[in-house]
Length: 272
Length: 230
Image (tube, rainbow over all chains, first blue to last red; front, side, top):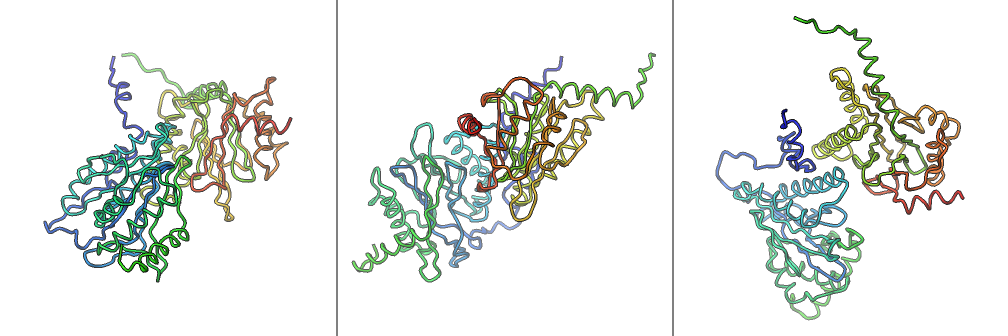
């Protein structure tokens, strides 16, 4: 009897993975490095997302990002969104080449939703983080041409009852951070700021303030990162992920806190 | 050399249809009702883990009766169709109509070409956005026959009796609790037993929800919704 006819059903554990399905059924839709004839790096001319950060607080995690995309020394867009809802209990913040990064975020969202629908159950937070790592690794070839994507992944772990966050390198290496992390061109400045301001078990208001301080510091020091734009009314996007789900912090609230920070800094007479 | 038996095409189709109908009539039924805030799906299903009603996409739900492994295969194929389409175009471009056509083609092909037809009926429902568009409910039979239904639909073992009952009792714009009670009464119309929340699997396509409209109603909430009658 030919066992092959049914045994493959047990080996096909990728059954509920959308990215595997896409690669198998519609490879032309699968994001991958565009073949380029010249070896010249494209990085300069392509918009890059600049600073995103995530930090833990009492109820879960905060994710925040500035709104600017930068191509070389030019502003490519003032209003892009860098923090995406991955599913009800997790989010992904993208830094690096904006196009591939947004494509990756979309593929990741679909992947999680597809799994949930097919299996009737959610992936564990570790499972989600691992899957994102694999997607980044698939982008390695493009990353070598200067189109790197380095997201931050954060979510609420239902089993453990805590917020958790993960950072990645361009090869898909995944590292869990216990307190905070930032990615993108302004990440060093944001991290320096977080290092001084972050404390264990902060309240929501404190965490919001700390996130925005760090983003304003990043915008202050890094030419690629956009600060709060009072003229156009563009403010950093800030999201919370807690037991009750993925939520927005409203623009009004962000605006108010930004204005407080800026006016306090004006009084002291130095930028920080 | 022995000659293969000759069976006339009419006879073959008749036999297959009878076989499929027999399989389906053994299964428990499902009713679907258009309600004030969307579409309600009520299935008689004592299992809490093996679903007959499930989510396909933002506004689209799936229900299947008959042989579990067969409609489960169709369900997963539907999710794949929807997710790939939504990924390559936009989420708004995924429609129940395209999906129902795909099911109809698939079941039609299987019915004519395979020795054993699928013993299933499936239902694809899409809730309207609310801006003048209408809900869509498609009912696809084991041989690929496709019908679009208005107001209510029933499939499974006692579908004919249930349909007759709903024809007399259905009213437009029912709230969730009343519609659910009507659905449960419809399911028991040919039976002498009563159905408790443990025998039911209930889900709604809830127009008031953001993006993903599909929502399962857990047993605790069910007993509350059913209890209002008593």
